[in-house]
Length: 197
Ligand SMILES: [Fe+2]
Image 1: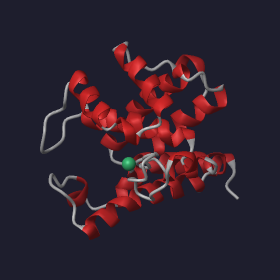
Image 2: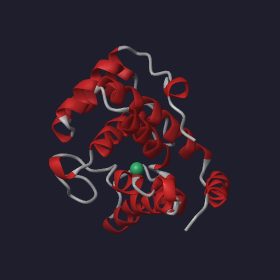
Image 3: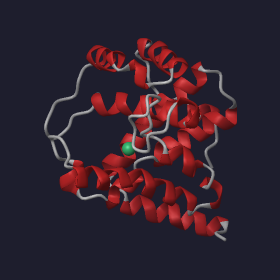
Image 4: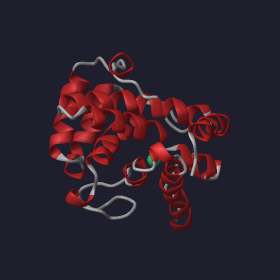
């Protein structure tokens, strides 16, 4: 059993292990996901959950080879299997922390799509709502960010790309996401409204 001091030590240790870009991505995804959660009128607990799970969702990438993470082209079958492990590792990190244990499943399924094309092939009702919000926010941030092999897409372009694949996302979540993205104001609000400690 991990006590509060132990939990704080784990959090501090994680921040030294996890690459800064992964932490920054988690914060940006959390900002977007929080606004989607507000738009969906979710409870304060769910809003808090979506921010926490978003922040941690990619921590497991610290244990995936950089060549795979940064590979510009299509991954081989073996590379894809290794890439998939990051969702499992991230969820295991959450489960190490008593207060984050229940976020483990939300994090594990952050690559699931309702058409079953995600990492574990889950479909619509099998996917936790929080995971459905993270996947949309995650893809938006990934496409909006520079990569070693391409420049960031502009917001309009990202919306176009995602809309062409909207059948992969929960309809209610995707519509809420489109409304908040239209506002073009993705500044975090949760720091004022929620205590994450
Ligand atoms: Fe991920």
